[in-house]
Image 1 (cartoon, rainbow, N blue to C red):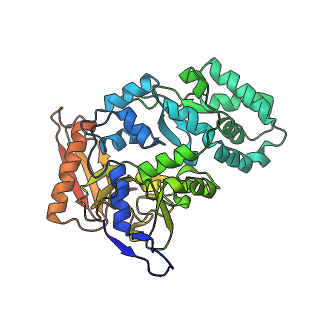
Image 2 (cartoon, rainbow, N blue to C red):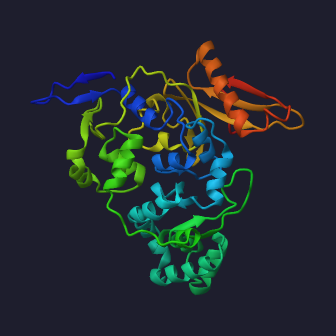
Image 3 (cartoon, rainbow, N blue to C red):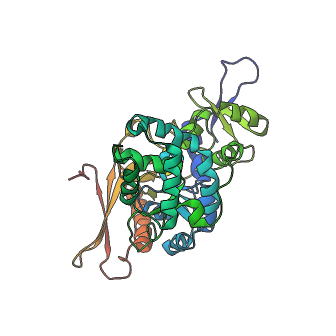
Length: 386
């Protein structure tokens, strides 16, 4: 691991971790330097959830991280209710284990309360306690679509903003998206019920954040207080890190920011090989820090998405270096993966990326079995919105 000494401080100088060293440490913990032989449920727990605005990305996230991953494994967890889709971190939908859904959701309620305050002016005259009670009874009778929830609440508050009403229901209740939504190979509209109803057990009391801080460091560290706050959507975590300081080790990044870590966590050498990996849109390794330069070079900031539209990302030598899309073949045409390089990979690099793309296609599409074949294309100037 490459380090250098910070000579500006008096006394023992803290170890400074280079950007590459930080990246390698995070990729190791994210199982992106080498795939792990781990059950999907354990991987979801280790990663503290999978970003899941769309239904397919969690499957691609596990494919990039686990040896021999089969989408049917995660599908089975969804159908058995061992994993669920629920709004948690950063007010976004995540796939979590059932246990985490019942503990993390109460932990991040602070962020849901902040979100609700934004809509409060559009909810004048709305009794939020009554809204919670009405919504709970309604969605626990049977899973309901967001449109159905809005219409039910409008019967009570006809002059309220419809969108604000449905947002309020999502903020005051831990609503999960029920299957078949999120099950590989199936489709289903968004239908919601409470986590307690779906999992047939109560939510846990709001936990102290200490254990979640340690889990975050285990999956995303070394990291700063601001990194953790950005990942979780929480505030005022400095006192938690200070309370945990005796259990942790500290470093500095190249900008002098204090970083915390678990003493025995892996911190590979910055020159550790990092094979290409295809990540879906909104992968948490790209979103898990306030300072994302350990994975996204500054010159490529914002290139993996525009607004809420994100593209699949290719990691090359441990850094975001390309975007990709998958086009299913029709009429006997091959399934195609198109890769837009941000910088040239070179012949050997393209060969490695092509091998990784072929492995993705073999698992996630029928191209390897239906005779249509596949193609991998490289382009530096493709317009993915065209």
